[in-house]
Image 1 (tube, rainbow, N blue to C red):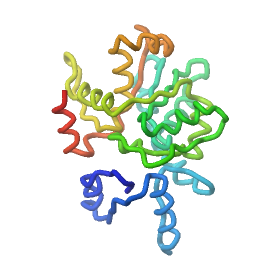
Image 2: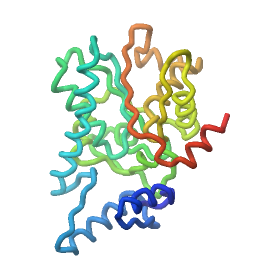
Image 3: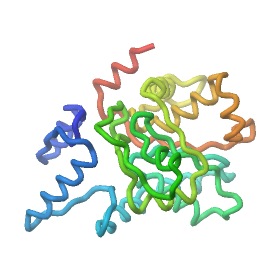
Length: 252
């Protein structure tokens, strides 16, 4: 696991019977390291969702698996969503969702797609800002509580899909992510309580901040978030770090 990973996350993996080590490497370098280790073992196989070079098949399968989520919510909706906010690490979840939307919704009715990333490690935001059509890497070893999104380089199969489909790219701070987690855990009225981890809450947290903060009226207007908006966000994890989750819940 990359530098900065919480010990409790590593222990969850060990509890399933697999060895797990937290390294001094950033996410991109951990992927390279594990790929090298798999090649050295005659029975080795690398299973993860970052695609590059000739490593495409497994990430594509993972992306296809994510797309099932879109299949499910589209079947449950009476109307087509107008907006969808997708959190991105390497982008495989987001591209899988986008592919499912493109397959099932006419082009003229596709929702406005916004990609959401931590402000400290926003490789899609960076790539869109540079705007040369290429994927770019966030340097160094950035930190964020959104551990599942702490990825510095867009996946080779996700970048083209997201580049051609997303209309907006957004970032959020750790404080905003934590605020969103608390909002989900303490809903208004009869809304159901939702236990969401730091990465899982990212898209909701961004939308919640934009809609509730009066300073962001201009952004709401640009995103066309009005009373007619039908917004989709997806919670992609529960409290995978229970200690940090409880700490965040106690914060004000």
